[in-house]
Length: 422
Image 1: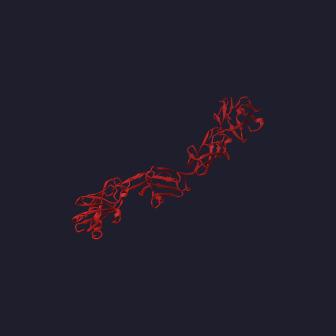
Image 2: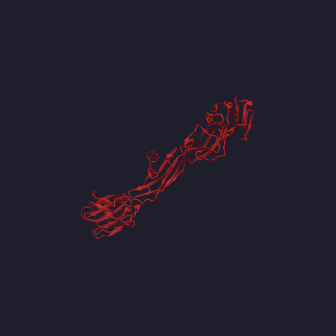
Image 3: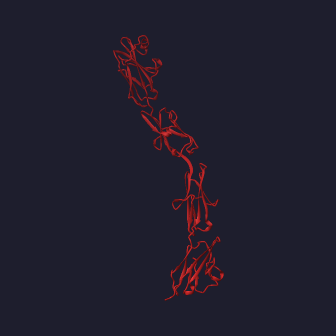
């Protein structure tokens, strides 16, 4: 009996066998699009007359790829033939340059000399060569604990998805925000630790492709606003500064982005937009409370820190030089710790009364003699007093009176001893 074209398809409806030993396996077993594939057939038995290959779930003419007559080697394409399929004499099916559309169920139907048929089933999965996906974000700039992040891994392929954070696999706590299909990452109340580069990767058994990174910034702060002086945090402290010396205060905080700074002195804003404040020459006028206010333009939050700055106070004292002067010598009554904001001072021979005044220094820096001046006393800018050519009557009490620019008055006394000349 000669078989041509589709003629034996009609016979097979009457003589269908229940045999199920035929198996079909693709070679290679995980082919990529563009590969040459062979659907290898195993378990054929008996002397066969013809083969039918179907690309579909049933033995329907619609799914017929090709019919093959073993004796003549004639092959007849069917409705499902794409121009890439060819049947081998051993019954296997070659597919050249496979497409994604070649994926699916394949059925081989055989006809033997007894006009009995057998069928074998196989499945072919052609994997896509994946293009890089794209990460889409609802925003790339977020405020900590306020905003929600939503990232979408956009890819036309149904491939599996993996996420990466700063080049590493996504931490488990962040993975908890993934949708069931892994393509959407949602983070409510995002934290600063989640700022960085995000990527997604699509993959299948034959191809892997990763997106370009998308960088997220998380704004926070300011926090822990502090004032630093000499590399030491001085927030809430009192800083004592010597008269006429300089002082620099630095304002620091934890913030993203870097905050805007405003300085205030005793509650009054200063014209300073820097993170530091410099006092070039400390006087009593600069004493008070200095406050740094840090403002974050993104979070709209602010924080502040304050310090108190005061002039150093050193106990004033009088030391004679030499300490045990002798009759005929000169002696200097040296004043240590005198007020740096001095206005005037006066020396007295005895109690501080006008008849006893030796000399006074005026704001101009010049000194004038008093009623008790002997012509041997000289005053200095540092409040010290020189008494020349001592005699025994110079021994006794000396009194120094100082007045500061703020009107503060201080009085100090010294008993001077003069040894007789031998």
